[in-house]
Length: 484
Ligand code: AHR
Image (cartoon, rainbow, N blue to C red; front, side):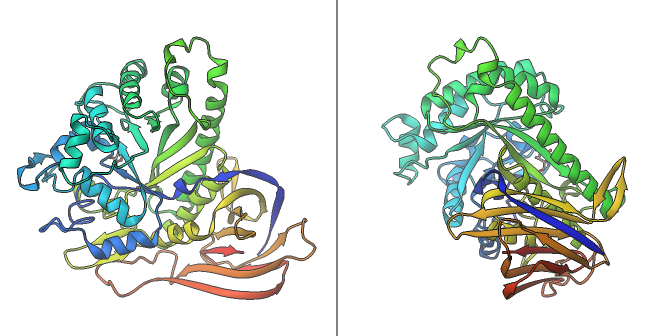
């Protein structure tokens, strides 16, 4: 089978924000208790920490998710023996609150990642959220800043990213918002009180469908830095092509939201006087894909969310990452949901942990796909006809890293059996010198890494140095390849 990839080096898309490689942990099942920390001792699990380190995540979202609708941050500070154990009314079970704000910040420091906190807009209050900002970021002698110092943290945590609720357009588990006008009214109070505490913070609006987003953008555009989109892809009865098609739909949603963001830019909407005294935003508003991933329904554990991923799911993840690069001018951050045990690249039991198949593209892209996103066009035979559209065998993206003067072309061959002889058309250089090929493949399309066989890794990674000029390359079936 033959295909062609054209790299249009002159057509740059935008800066690939490192924050697109973020992660997310929630008080949900074994995500934190039993994942991030040991279920018995509440100590950080070193095996898990080492695996997350490999993902070099620049951003970690916490504490939810839907659980933010019942989470009160003051339950998770101060002496551990005095912290209340609460029922997890959203996901079931009990939360001991041993991993609270400061433990989360310590965890972020270990990972060299930026913390991203989400506030409770349902059973919480704007004042509670503002106090949290003060507790984390205050440097004076005010009560919550002093409390943090008393708890052993003299320096402010400087938490930059704050989410204004989570999926507030969803049928509210605890009943309150759901009406976009109500959200606007309340978010305004939250935003103002939080920004008055610390004007330098970045705010993420809890986005929803087109109608919801329209009202949010009309009213809250100037105060926000991001509007969120959540997207979980799944397959129809385990059919890989249906998963790829579902992922492709997401790109359309991103493009439609981008248009809305541009059409409803503050200068185009009247009457923003109410934002008087609001510190102005430094960068243009972008999309925060602050929950994305693959949600198949056959998992185990709390809410069946402990999903085993096969190799084709990893090809889907690379497809998602290609989308984020192709839409780099509007995607400002993305946090995979979730990091450990829940829809996760890392799975644990009481003794061990493993990397699922989806871990590997996350690790590889983070390492090499950075800088400026570059346009690619691909001609490849159809993997499947999806509606009127052709879902091609190949999926691509490219980036140029100014620091190392290196172009990285990412190509996913989604076909289970066919190798694809691919011509690479790069008109700006007479001969294209590829010096490195990084390739991920697996023992089969449906192979999975599981805790039943912790030492057996079905994924192989090959790094090959190539020192000649080439214009075509053969891509292995079901492979993820980075050519540099
Ligand atoms: O990631 C699991 C859940 O999915 C999150 O709590 C919620 O925001 C989403 O619906």
